[in-house]
Length: 562
Image (cartoon, rainbow, N blue to C red; front, side):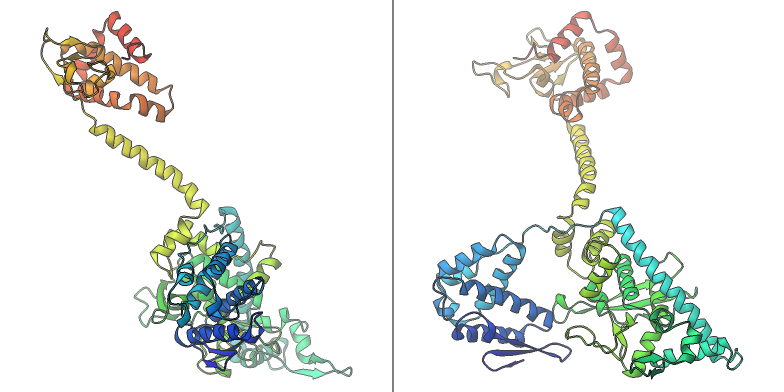
């Protein structure tokens, strides 16, 4: 990091430098210098990637723009007031980007010695929660379409490269007659493999053109019939990235910087290679950038088959890159049709000759647009893989997986409804199993006990549900739940009929309503039935009288409620 007042130079982990000019901020020079100093301190101590410093600088520009729009803009940080900070918060809190600006710039500002105490600091330390995510997973049909498009593009490229690779191998083995068509084609492929290009000559008009010898044998000069014979194009490399995302749940930054997988030294007795895949995830923080995944190619539908195919499709590009710059080791390697075009993105792997590496955000967006898809498929696709299809985290914490991927997703929520309902129903069933008959069973009736619609009561004055004027205020159905109740053999016919009537009511009421109004009473009668036994219960039902049935009808219609 270099800092000379208004210019901050941030050096990332790859040793490349990005410059930020704070003199362009629309605020007074003292405030520009203060913001530059805070920014430089974080570049030196915390930020290892240009993506971080670019993001925060963009947010600082937004903050400076807000200050410049005030009636009396502060000239430096010591002129910030609590009211101004609160006004800034109110202007940003309605959007996710605004909240990010407030929380990120507030954290930056709190590094200033003048902002350590007081009401301004209290406003800057406000806890900012995230707004609910609006990004959703793909529905099944749309995600299948994304994968189908990517699979078609990559498979076509793989077959093309494999076919030309076989021809090149035969040429190198001397199988073709010198100067024959196949020999000349092999010669052209060999040149492509070693240099990435073919000889060109200047035409009379001044433009460069593929020499006629190779134009004739290749069938033209377009990329489709020249260098694409051995190298993936940008479109095809992006399609491969989409397939890696769909298969393994990797995000775009991981795919962009993925190193070449290596097969283990001992693939096992079956000969199936197991790949050790090194992954880089900078957002996890210093010391936790790297992790590995292991996948085995055991057949056409195995997790490792895509790695085998990707290695085959990129082998010429990776070999050429290593030849031009020994030590280069990137998994996604492809050839650009514009080798002369440079990039200002110093965060991504630098190009080597005509070879480019990884898949950028621009690559993804352009690919989706050309394939007729609505936006880059990577973020929504990864959410679909992790939250819906796999239901497990990858390269992030369980908390992030639950909070960011699972809980806000509408497909997950919809799929959870029947699961939650089934769980609730199971819980109710288990709860019903614990509902027991509380009334005491007796052999004969005690003349001193008062008769109710369902049992005899031994002490209505000590009811658990006393009436306002004294006595019991509970429904007669609750007699079965009361320890003051007594049930003897003469009650069995009436209670057996009640049990049957409740089962009939169940068939005409919504389940929730039946459970609420009659579930407990039915469970207690089930307990009584189990105690008496099926045979005794059937015998009791057969002995029910017209009076028993009339009393139960009145009870169920509410005419006997206290």
